[in-house]
Image (tube, rainbow, N blue to C red; front, top):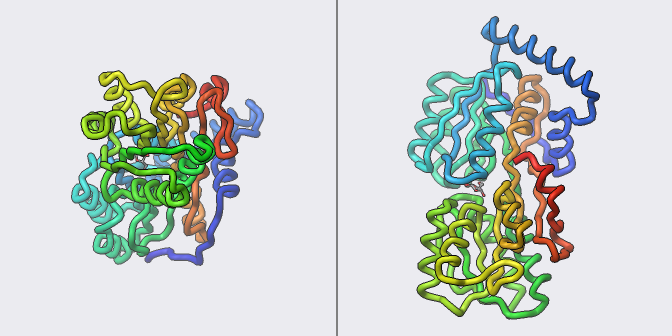
Length: 350
Ligand code: AHR
């Protein structure tokens, strides 16, 4: 039977508390070692008695560094030591394959299903099948356009787009912008949200023109191809490139390098990126990316917290927004973003 409980909306503070609580960062080293030993022992017992909680994770694919960090986060969280058996499927950005993966989780009668949906559309039927089977579903990372699931855990991608736009407005301070956008995958909520958020701010700036907007599919090769084609059409006409993830930004930088176009804090073109994964942050520290808006991939601990609340039969949060930050290159100060330092980069988990 489906354990649909009264839901509550929890915000960034509680999400942060859940994350830090799971990390146990305030414990002493001795306490942590004792906790680890106890967790391993109870995990071993659960494993031996067949009491592991079975969780299926239908992952988007492996298109980006962000996705790799997110996959590793799930694989390191849903372990036998922590009391779980994880069934992981990489759908390779194929919507039909992802839906079939969920169907197979239902057939296997797993205890929980977690989906990072490739696209917002097409989920009604399979989610009804999960509901009929009494399996709770948590939608993670990206959103969908239906409501027949139990909980959502992910970032606010529209706010990410707004942050990028607000930073650009602050940086340009009334100067003209001729903008090219390399969007993420078509139909993905991360694409739709970032586009919507950025366009909302762009609409407040009559001095900005969005020259063109094309999908780079959240990949480096996609970003490079789109940028090469933009250069053919708009060379000399643009001064801002918005890349909706770091991998697209790497491809766009390769294309601009090949065409002899300079970018970053000392160049002719401003680059905005999203994700703030390790290499994207390095490029920001190097001044090649002007502004990098984080999309936090470390979400599995929050999903695990929701599952634990469901297991206890208590009220669980229906919607948990994982907090993000934004970073700007050295030499830039901003009300919307933190100026990156080597120390910040060294302290990051992904
Ligand atoms: O849904 C999150 C987005 O998907 C990340 O920005 C991107 O890198 C990934 O592929």
